[in-house]
Length: 139
Image (cartoon, rainbow, N blue to C red; front, side):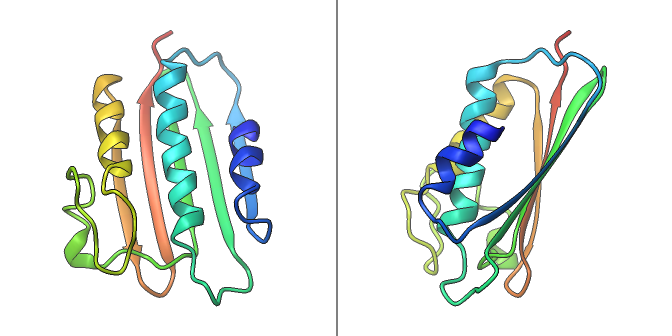
């Protein structure tokens, strides 16, 4: 996680990351797919930040136990319109307010499906977006 935060932090030096990892057990999973998932979500949190925001923040909380990893990524960015929340994981879906290819969240969802994980999202225009991910521990 620290490597991903460091890598993505170069794209916006004003972005502040708060990372919390609570892991007291071994976690076994598909490292490549998990990295793709996290990288896309962190990248989006940076890309869709409010341009006038003076305190750009991404919070990442990870809880790992014998059964699963629960990952929450929260930002204080632009947010996603309520009417778009059901469509954001659809291939090529793009909101008029957001730029991009419409592939990032589709790739996240597909990668999670391959490793039997799931994702939930909550968002509003004032406070930003929160993604909650659960990935089974294959141990």
